[in-house]
Image (cartoon, rainbow, N blue to C red):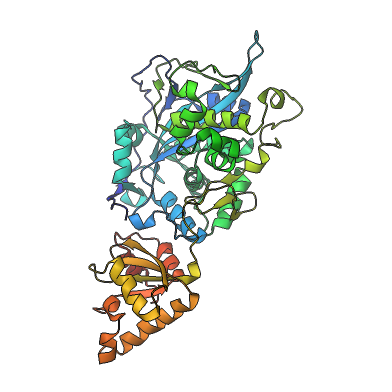
Length: 515
């Protein structure tokens, strides 16, 4: 069982407007990637608009205040597609964005050598949750959760929380802008400013590149567009209407056999992919490649505003992670057979990459929150099997699952399985998964065992003082009268309940599910 994580519930007003330009302490060094730091009061809209318009693709990454509000809201192998989406939706709606990284990659041909390179422009936008209006009225405060393990992780990677909360850009969704349009205030207009860059990505149909980016996309939708719809199908369709060209580098890595051989069964994390596929850049050497097959990537280390707004990037800073993602993608394109010299030199094609036949099989296919042997197809709004994925766990038959909660903490796996085996047979239980110390999912060998188990529970409770009931093997599970049970749909209903109690039993009881 995963270690329990603590949660902080933050409720804060919007910081007052600060138009001063703060300077960053530069940590420049040989081979370092300089990332532009954008805070409240910095001018960025016009310059970045030009960069996005001229980019072949834009890589992105997000850093947030948490991922799972409780351990049982983390995705695992017993989750159906619907349950995984409910957990994703809850995460994106309850946690806040602290950084958003954008890195346009612009093709550039060397005048003397004729070599085609990409010029990367990594930006880290420091963000702060917005309020619907200025002032000290607590009713207008935004609320968001913080997962302490996530905060510790960010702190270990030198995240400056003061910059986010005091000097971060506000963000406002289209839906909230529409609601506030009747009485616009300065804070609303400021918050819309950053969101317009997201609108620009959409209006220009830019190719958006992320790594394992389903949570990033969910946050983009929730923070900049509207509340996430209630079903995965509707969510994917609405995302596709707004961002019709998305590539997930983790999907390409898992789906392409040539890349699999190159990775040699290494971790599919972003940093691992960056080290394996872009060794020259990741090692801190020159950004010009040394292998004939490598894509040359240069970094724009300053602009008209000077170098004071640039810091040496580091892993888990959004702008630098976006840069790594774009570098990985450019190299992946080579491995899937895309020849940039030919593709980007054809003036008759307005969107040469997203229309490329070799990239088409990977376009709008996103890696899910758990490797279930499926891929999320945002073009069709469906989750479908992906034969190239190496599934780590055997398939779970959801219709054969019983959920129990509220049982004694002394009840362990061996006791639980042993009690059931005495009634349904030694091979009746395939496996047991403890959600936490108060709840478990039991997978039976046959679907009819689910109905029989639930019927037996009801009968034993109705005749709880009967000597036969007291001596029944299942009475150990139901001892004390607090144990409740349901089928897999009951589990889904508990997850759908919007609150997040620490213990699953408390969540189930609060949700009021029938049992």
